[in-house]
Image 1 (cartoon, helix red, strand yellow):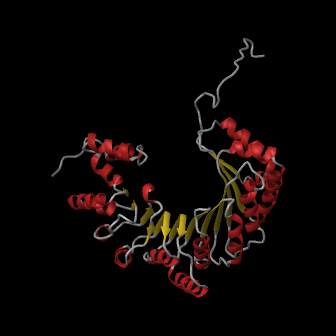
Image 2 (spheres, rainbow, N blue to C red; image 1 turned 30 degrees about the horizontal axis):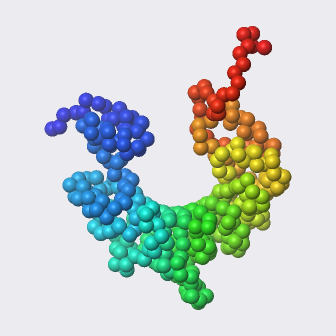
Image 3 (tube, rainbow, N blue to C red; image 1 turned 90 degrees about the horizontal axis):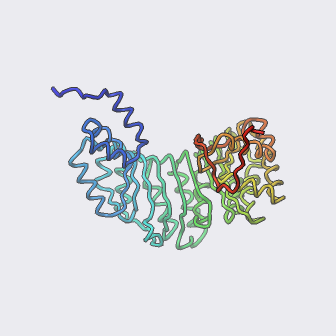
Length: 378
């Protein structure tokens, strides 16, 4: 009978939780404390990143030595050109998320996976429900579709910076691809970045093929592709859509900088899917620059006012603003006051939200040029 640990299990869990799932901290725990090692290893293998072909074999050998860790592997991030799915998929019963991203040095290589690899994913990757694909270049649209169809239980799809090297030769081929995807692809959640790095054919194909199953849709609207995709979104029926999020991009230039704001208004006006409940428009960081642009450019002020009125059509709509840096509560309060001037309807409803980590330390964000001291505080 093994001896009881000197640390209570509750304390071990509390210590591990404070690691924030940081791999370096978990590795330190596993190397310095035998009682923390088992739980640390379980969390360390939960999200695995494989960048080189030799790492595939090394990870497989590691799991063969510690087979009890196989059920704890939930997510794999890898370059599809170097990843060999068998036997890893076969021995990872809990793997539910797969992320494909091209190596920085090989980003311009065309991806065309062999049929044997796709067949392996289709046969042994039945537990994979989330697929994230980024910075990939496909030779043809058919190659892209074969990748999607290799994951039969796909529920969540995230696409960013995808391109097609050879355009579709004729409309008949495109219709056949759409029909096959609409019959076999059933994602519930789709997240997509619409930029110059994302092929319009891919974006339109996904939105049209999955319009009847998507429940949660998140789109990043960039000024170089915004107008071309808005019509595609409005044309679909969206019978199951419950939640839509539009993430905006802006620039100091007008009208280029306001295009994503204008596109969000175009999408949302007369946009009435039968099941739609939640509508969110997200402005990126930094908030200070946004306020500067609104104050200095009349076009921004007009569009912000129009967006404010457009969002009133939904009772659960909201405007969200993000700050990357820790922010003092007083600055958050100031930002809320200033933003309320430009989005008064959302502010009255309590739907104007600022997300930021609170900064509690006393300090200054910028260089101090002058310091004034008053002995009587007057």
